[in-house]
Length: 175
Image (tube, rainbow, N blue to C red; front, side):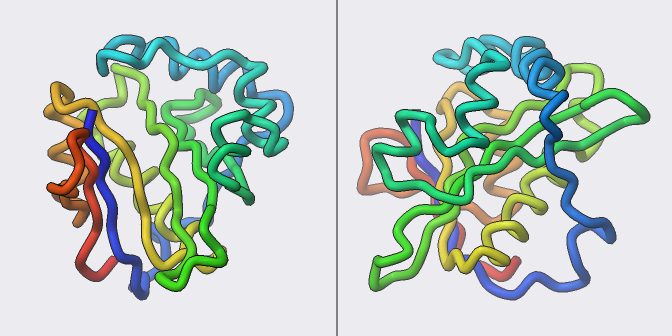
């Protein structure tokens, strides 16, 4: 596993021409289904339960609490009435001299929608969300065996943090 990060700057032209679409209370099971559909595409990712999504949105997830993450949300991409993809985000480090950090906790896209730009749209919306919440940097972790995810992150401007044993990536360009 490696972490990736980025330095956030102005977003030009909006967010793929659309507003950010957030999960609704009744969609936790559908979001769980999205993550279960991509189980084990990364070695340590086994999907998330509807209860996990509820705890993430409420800000009561233990991992979010451990890093002091706030503004935890789930951004969704819909194809018709189906949730095609989700990205879970939170913000931490508001008191850091380097500025707050957008934590891209997970991105999952149903296999039948992979390769169609859904993951890229979700990542762009996540970065826009972070910018709107005052984040100056972004961070995510990727399995170094998940070549498709790493390609997406690098093409979006993230770079691996070489000072980590895990693959930490940072974004050093303009969004």
